[in-house]
Length: 240
Image (cartoon, rainbow, N blue to C red; front, top):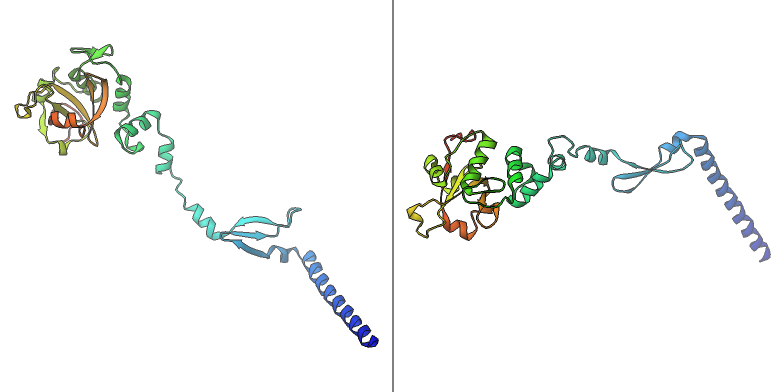
């Protein structure tokens, strides 16, 4: 019995020694062959490989595979890209994009929105024509003159008579919008207020209560008081 036990111990020792020698040979083979190390690649996360780095003291490094690189190379980077355009937008563009519920890059008539911003909050004054106070028709007259280089009659009624009438569904940026704020009988078309249309149902005007500001034609008050839109025959934007 003792002899059998001794024989088993000796056989186990021989097998262990043999395995250790083979393992050491494999280690020595990779140490003496750096190229073999470089070809070892273990993929453990989708899009990344673990590779041996023969140029540094560290044994591994992270590296994106070719499939991931092709995805990253397709990321838009041109100057015409929306993200880059937004990054280059001004505070005025952001301000009026928020007010008008529009995309930032669509606020691209810089002369127009700079003009509006300069006059923003100027108080209403009947007959006024400067930043100490201005009325509605004085504001539209000054806007058309300064931004588009065109001229308009002075009063809202005269401006209405000089325009080609358009329905509110046909309005485009640059048209005028006319209101009858003095009578509930809209069919009489008594024009007492005018604003400048900006698109998306918004218009800028000199309001009696708020001064130069922006409102929506969808607001109940202006929806009820709206009479007509108008295209001036003088404005450079007017191509129809």
